[in-house]
Each structure stands twice: as structure tokens, then as C-alpha cells.
Image (cartoon, rainbow, N blue to C red; front, side, top):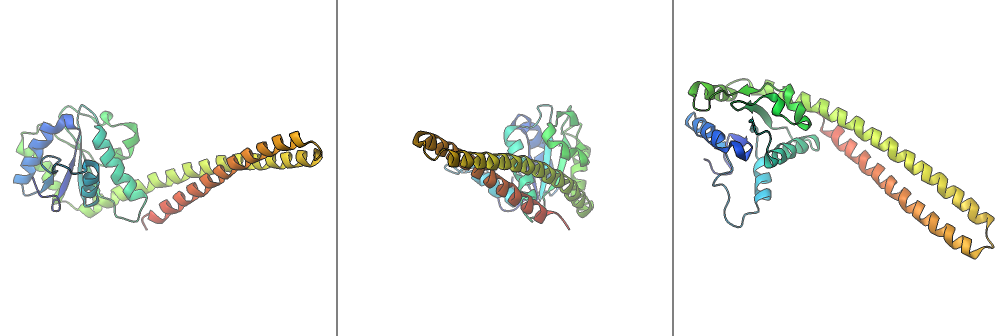
Length: 238
């Protein structure tokens, strides 16, 4: 396989499908495509997750392999990292090519990755067949800009839906904050009515302080959600 800094495609896969993906990677290399597979890429003492994310930051094209074993934990982390990197920044999205390994179907895809169903899958029926691997080599000769734009549009729709969810969360948080504001107002009114009762004043003051702390947490959450919405809106493709 290749050095870490120079590669054409990142091979994202479930470790249970390693043998099949290794064969595909070797055939791609023979076809002139430089691949990155997580074998022999790390030295003793390397922080494995950190190094992996550094590689993903250099990734322009990802072959996302889906086998009968489904999506592996690290594979899930990889696609999640790339996806979040795109929706939370202005950086161009990587080109994702979903690939079905022999015996697998789109039904093996977890629901959280349903947005990948909007992209044309490449089905590989036999990893030993050069004709089958040629389907993957064609990815590098077809109009990549068209496919990349399609993926960007799909993610834009996903981002818009996420914004709607965040807005609903803000509405709920605002409701809680307003209810606490009313509670605080009622406590203050009760404190004014019981100025001569020191014990009652202490208890009401504690109750008021707890309500103020809770309201402050909701207000901070509202600010965080609003900032997240702004960040997503800023990353929408023009």
C-alpha cells in the first residue's frame, strides 16, 4: 500500500471484511489507483485514532464497503467524522462511493446512514474478478464533479433537516426557560409577602437560586443550539 500522504482513495471497511477489501485494494493498485488501507500504516507509539483522523482530513475519495457483516465500529466512526466535518464547516465534502461486497445488500446499512442510499451503489459480486474491479476503476475516469455535486446536494438536504430538529430543540428549551422565569417571578412575589419570616425567606431564596441556575442552563443550551444552526447554515453549498 501507499505512504500516508499520497493516495487516491481511502478504503473504509468493517475489519471482518478485511480479506475481501485487501484483495480489491491490491487489484486497484495494479490498475494504477493508490489506496489507503489501515495495514502497515502506523508505527509503535502512534496514537491510532488521531493518526486516522489526520488521514481522513486528507481524503478526497472514500470507498465505503458494505458487507454481510454490516458496518464496523471504526468504519462507522470514519464515515461519521467525514460527514460531521462537512456539515460543520465550509470544507468540500469527500467523494463517497458506497460499495456492496458479495452477498451484501443495502438493507445491511444502518438507519443513521440512510442518506448514503441516495448515492449509486457499486455492487461487487466477485472480488477475484478483474471485470468486477473495473467497475471501481471507472469511478476515476467518470465525471467525478457530477457525482460529487450529487452527494453535496444530498448532504444539504440532510443539513436542512438537522436545522429543523435544532429549531425544535430551541423551542422546547425556550419553553422551559420561560416557565422557570415565571416560577422565579412567583418566588420573588412570595418572598415580598413574607419579609418577616426569616426561615421562609431562606427556603424561598434557595428555591429561587436553583430555579435561576436551571434557567441559566437552558439559556446556555439555547445559545449553543443557535450557534450550531449558524455554523450549519454557513456551510450550506451555494
